[in-house]
Image 1 (cartoon, rainbow, N blue to C red):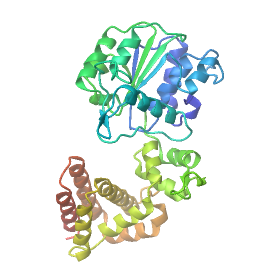
Image 2: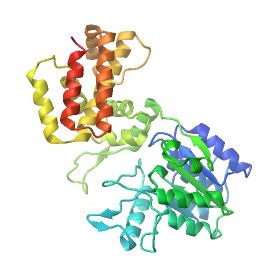
Image 3: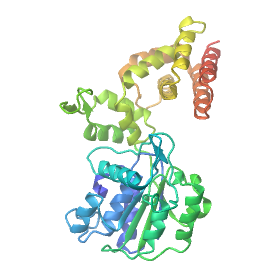
Image 4: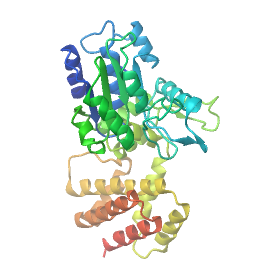
Length: 388
């Protein structure tokens, strides 16, 4: 489990939380909100460790007392972490022993070194837990445990990650806890946006906003914490290396301030994907290769790949605009700076902006589950219209 010192880029939020803890002014509930993958859940863990440390410093938990050691393994009896889970796995309901095993697996993975992100197979939610078979990892477990005094800590801490994934029933159940909070309990909810939660829940929490990480911060963390297997097909014998600095910088530029998103990107061949996007979006109107590529992408039915293509297109247009206007900002595609500057001089600002709008419209349509062929052909026509 991380300490405050392990989390980068959120000094303002950390200072606020440490001051509240030092003055014994912690509220009964926090809502940490901000872009996914910027340290909200890690900070919730660090705060839990800090408030229950036997020998804390002014800025962090000691890391060596009995409480800290239990927190480091996520085995403290007064700490509860609730996160979204699928209702079934491989066609079998996620309940009973299977559900408990899944919770243990996620917790065990979380204490390993590296950059962590919750991932799901299909849809996932935080449910209320209707019976003993499904109460593990649910709001039902929280309600039950919140009614008991801490076993050995000063404060019993509950962390609900991605709280916007709570079902309506779970939200209403949690609201009852927030309306009449039991003593010696601290609830910490994390979400991307407060608007994803009931207004009545948000109003009963003290909100703390987490900022997006800078490209420089993300690049440094990727080079420090991410390892790429040299031989992916032989994981038991493979050595690993940090990502290439150029790849790390490109992933950071595309990540939208999210460390976990950048970490996922560096495991992909993003340079190849970027170059393919630039080639495709740079084809002249009427070129038969445009429609060949559209048919290929549509047949593949890979929304993630098309999303990447659009994202790289937007990143490229952003660099073209920066180069065309002389903005004093580093290019995201620094390894292709010569090409960026040549294209920006040839295209001009007005056309760059029209292409950007076409890409943004395609992104919205894709996120709205638009039909892939229609999204792609609308994008192609939008890009063609921008050069007429």
